Image (cartoon, one colour):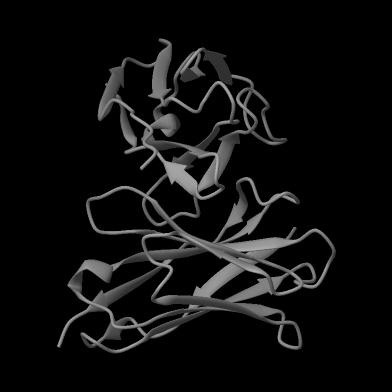
Length: 107
Length: 120
Protein backbone atom coordinates (compact mmCIF):
# COMPACT_ATOMS: atom_id res chain seq x y z
CA UNK A 1 0.00 0.00 0.00
CA UNK A 2 1.03 3.60 -0.55
CA UNK A 3 3.05 5.23 2.25
CA UNK A 4 4.20 8.68 3.23
CA UNK A 5 7.36 8.94 5.32
CA UNK A 6 8.05 11.70 7.84
CA UNK A 7 10.81 12.08 10.45
CA UNK A 8 9.46 11.23 13.91
CA UNK A 9 10.79 14.41 15.46
CA UNK A 10 12.31 17.80 14.71
CA UNK A 11 13.70 20.17 17.30
CA UNK A 12 14.52 23.85 16.87
CA UNK A 13 15.14 26.88 19.06
CA UNK A 14 12.73 29.82 18.99
CA UNK A 15 13.33 32.08 16.02
CA UNK A 16 15.03 29.38 13.98
CA UNK A 17 13.64 27.65 10.89
CA UNK A 18 12.02 24.23 11.13
CA UNK A 19 11.77 21.99 8.10
CA UNK A 20 9.60 18.88 8.13
CA UNK A 21 9.78 16.54 5.16
CA UNK A 22 7.31 14.07 3.76
CA UNK A 23 8.31 11.54 1.11
CA UNK A 24 6.17 9.39 -1.12
CA UNK A 25 6.33 7.98 -4.63
CA UNK A 26 3.03 9.53 -5.70
CA UNK A 27 3.81 13.04 -4.50
CA UNK A 28 4.96 14.24 -7.95
CA UNK A 29 1.44 13.46 -9.18
CA UNK A 30 -0.69 14.15 -6.13
CA UNK A 31 -1.03 17.25 -3.96
CA UNK A 32 0.10 17.20 -0.35
CA UNK A 33 -1.59 18.76 2.63
CA UNK A 34 -0.22 19.55 6.09
CA UNK A 35 -2.07 19.52 9.42
CA UNK A 36 -1.10 20.83 12.84
CA UNK A 37 -2.35 18.82 15.83
CA UNK A 38 -2.27 20.06 19.40
CA UNK A 39 -3.69 18.12 22.38
CA UNK A 40 -7.31 18.95 23.13
CA UNK A 41 -7.71 21.13 20.06
CA UNK A 42 -9.24 20.61 16.65
CA UNK A 43 -6.56 19.89 14.05
CA UNK A 44 -5.83 22.71 11.63
CA UNK A 45 -4.75 22.58 7.99
CA UNK A 46 -1.72 24.83 7.61
CA UNK A 47 -0.82 24.11 3.95
CA UNK A 48 -2.95 22.77 1.10
CA UNK A 49 -2.12 21.86 -2.49
CA UNK A 50 1.61 21.60 -1.67
CA UNK A 51 2.21 25.29 -1.00
CA UNK A 52 -1.02 27.21 -0.53
CA UNK A 53 -1.62 28.78 2.87
CA UNK A 54 -5.20 29.05 4.18
CA UNK A 55 -6.44 32.38 5.43
CA UNK A 56 -5.62 32.87 9.07
CA UNK A 57 -2.43 30.79 8.96
CA UNK A 58 0.67 32.88 9.76
CA UNK A 59 3.01 33.71 6.89
CA UNK A 60 5.85 31.87 8.63
CA UNK A 61 4.26 28.61 7.45
CA UNK A 62 5.15 27.65 3.89
CA UNK A 63 5.21 24.53 1.74
CA UNK A 64 7.37 23.38 -1.13
CA UNK A 65 7.84 20.32 -3.28
CA UNK A 66 10.75 18.65 -5.04
CA UNK A 67 10.34 15.33 -6.74
CA UNK A 68 9.00 12.75 -4.30
CA UNK A 69 9.43 15.01 -1.25
CA UNK A 70 7.30 17.82 0.07
CA UNK A 71 8.51 20.10 2.83
CA UNK A 72 6.72 22.14 5.46
CA UNK A 73 8.86 25.10 6.52
CA UNK A 74 8.19 27.18 9.60
CA UNK A 75 10.33 30.31 9.60
CA UNK A 76 10.97 32.11 12.87
CA UNK A 77 9.50 29.31 14.96
CA UNK A 78 7.50 30.38 17.98
CA UNK A 79 6.71 28.42 21.14
CA UNK A 80 3.07 28.13 20.03
CA UNK A 81 4.18 26.16 16.96
CA UNK A 82 5.12 23.18 19.12
CA UNK A 83 2.77 20.46 17.89
CA UNK A 84 2.50 17.30 15.85
CA UNK A 85 2.47 17.82 12.11
CA UNK A 86 1.05 15.35 9.58
CA UNK A 87 1.26 15.32 5.82
CA UNK A 88 -1.57 13.81 3.80
CA UNK A 89 -2.03 12.88 0.19
CA UNK A 90 -3.85 10.27 -1.85
CA UNK A 91 -2.79 7.37 -3.96
CA UNK A 92 -3.94 6.98 -7.52
CA UNK A 93 -7.08 5.08 -6.55
CA UNK A 94 -8.29 7.78 -4.22
CA UNK A 95 -7.98 6.78 -0.56
CA UNK A 96 -6.31 9.33 1.66
CA UNK A 97 -2.93 8.48 3.14
CA UNK A 98 -1.29 10.19 6.11
CA UNK A 99 2.35 10.31 7.01
CA UNK A 100 3.40 8.96 10.38
CA UNK A 101 3.56 12.42 11.92
CA UNK A 102 6.41 14.61 13.15
CA UNK A 103 6.64 16.00 16.65
CA UNK A 104 8.01 19.54 16.52
CA UNK A 105 9.73 20.53 19.74
CA UNK A 106 10.61 24.16 20.39
CA UNK A 107 13.63 24.11 22.67
CA UNK B 1 -17.86 29.86 10.56
CA UNK B 2 -18.79 26.28 9.98
CA UNK B 3 -18.14 23.92 12.89
CA UNK B 4 -18.39 20.17 13.35
CA UNK B 5 -18.67 18.25 16.61
CA UNK B 6 -18.47 14.54 17.33
CA UNK B 7 -20.72 12.74 19.81
CA UNK B 8 -21.35 9.19 20.90
CA UNK B 9 -20.51 6.53 23.49
CA UNK B 10 -17.02 6.62 24.89
CA UNK B 11 -16.97 2.90 25.64
CA UNK B 12 -17.91 0.04 23.33
CA UNK B 13 -17.64 -3.68 24.02
CA UNK B 14 -15.60 -5.96 21.74
CA UNK B 15 -17.56 -7.43 18.81
CA UNK B 16 -20.21 -4.70 19.08
CA UNK B 17 -20.84 -1.71 16.79
CA UNK B 18 -19.25 1.68 17.32
CA UNK B 19 -21.67 4.48 16.43
CA UNK B 20 -20.73 8.16 16.27
CA UNK B 21 -22.52 11.25 15.04
CA UNK B 22 -21.11 14.49 13.72
CA UNK B 23 -23.28 17.59 14.06
CA UNK B 24 -22.69 20.43 11.62
CA UNK B 25 -23.36 24.01 12.66
CA UNK B 26 -22.91 27.28 10.83
CA UNK B 27 -23.70 25.72 7.47
CA UNK B 28 -25.80 23.13 5.68
CA UNK B 29 -24.66 19.56 5.27
CA UNK B 30 -26.74 19.49 2.12
CA UNK B 31 -24.93 22.24 0.24
CA UNK B 32 -23.59 21.27 -3.16
CA UNK B 33 -20.08 19.94 -3.51
CA UNK B 34 -19.91 19.08 0.19
CA UNK B 35 -17.79 16.19 1.38
CA UNK B 36 -17.76 15.06 5.00
CA UNK B 37 -15.34 12.61 6.55
CA UNK B 38 -14.11 10.59 9.51
CA UNK B 39 -10.50 10.20 10.61
CA UNK B 40 -9.13 8.43 13.68
CA UNK B 41 -5.97 8.37 15.77
CA UNK B 42 -5.19 5.41 18.04
CA UNK B 43 -3.41 6.38 21.27
CA UNK B 44 0.24 7.13 20.58
CA UNK B 45 -0.15 6.48 16.86
CA UNK B 46 -0.76 8.41 13.67
CA UNK B 47 -3.84 9.50 11.77
CA UNK B 48 -5.90 7.06 9.71
CA UNK B 49 -8.55 8.05 7.17
CA UNK B 50 -11.74 6.05 7.70
CA UNK B 51 -13.91 7.35 4.89
CA UNK B 52 -15.86 10.21 3.35
CA UNK B 53 -19.38 10.88 2.15
CA UNK B 54 -20.69 13.27 -0.49
CA UNK B 55 -23.73 15.35 0.43
CA UNK B 56 -25.81 13.25 -1.99
CA UNK B 57 -24.99 10.08 -0.04
CA UNK B 58 -22.16 8.48 -2.07
CA UNK B 59 -19.58 7.13 0.35
CA UNK B 60 -15.91 6.19 0.00
CA UNK B 61 -14.04 4.04 2.48
CA UNK B 62 -10.52 3.08 3.45
CA UNK B 63 -10.00 -0.35 1.86
CA UNK B 64 -8.64 -1.69 5.14
CA UNK B 65 -11.93 -0.89 6.92
CA UNK B 66 -14.44 -1.13 4.08
CA UNK B 67 -15.97 -4.43 5.18
CA UNK B 68 -16.89 -3.01 8.61
CA UNK B 69 -17.70 0.66 7.98
CA UNK B 70 -20.81 2.59 7.01
CA UNK B 71 -20.99 6.39 6.76
CA UNK B 72 -24.37 8.02 6.25
CA UNK B 73 -25.92 11.48 6.09
CA UNK B 74 -29.08 12.74 7.83
CA UNK B 75 -29.89 16.03 6.15
CA UNK B 76 -32.95 16.62 8.37
CA UNK B 77 -30.68 16.81 11.42
CA UNK B 78 -27.66 18.36 9.65
CA UNK B 79 -25.61 15.40 10.81
CA UNK B 80 -23.55 12.57 9.40
CA UNK B 81 -22.72 9.32 11.13
CA UNK B 82 -20.15 6.56 11.40
CA UNK B 83 -20.84 2.92 12.17
CA UNK B 84 -17.94 0.50 12.66
CA UNK B 85 -18.96 -3.10 13.19
CA UNK B 86 -17.26 -5.96 15.04
CA UNK B 87 -14.86 -3.71 16.92
CA UNK B 88 -11.75 -4.89 18.72
CA UNK B 89 -9.25 -3.19 21.02
CA UNK B 90 -7.40 -2.08 17.87
CA UNK B 91 -10.32 0.26 17.13
CA UNK B 92 -9.70 2.24 20.32
CA UNK B 93 -8.93 5.73 19.09
CA UNK B 94 -9.69 9.43 19.05
CA UNK B 95 -12.29 9.78 16.30
CA UNK B 96 -12.50 13.04 14.38
CA UNK B 97 -15.18 14.23 11.98
CA UNK B 98 -14.39 16.86 9.38
CA UNK B 99 -15.73 19.05 6.60
CA UNK B 100 -13.67 18.45 3.49
CA UNK B 101 -12.85 20.78 0.62
CA UNK B 102 -15.30 20.80 -2.31
CA UNK B 103 -13.37 18.07 -4.10
CA UNK B 104 -12.93 15.74 -1.15
CA UNK B 105 -9.15 16.09 -1.20
CA UNK B 106 -8.47 17.15 2.38
CA UNK B 107 -10.09 18.07 5.69
CA UNK B 108 -10.87 21.76 5.88
CA UNK B 109 -12.52 21.97 9.30
CA UNK B 110 -12.11 19.40 12.05
CA UNK B 111 -13.89 18.65 15.28
CA UNK B 112 -11.95 18.27 18.53
CA UNK B 113 -12.41 14.52 18.40
CA UNK B 114 -14.06 12.03 20.72
CA UNK B 115 -12.24 9.17 22.41
CA UNK B 116 -13.76 5.74 21.97
CA UNK B 117 -12.40 2.86 24.02
CA UNK B 118 -13.15 -0.74 23.11
CA UNK B 119 -13.16 -2.83 26.24
CA UNK B 120 -15.33 -5.32 28.05
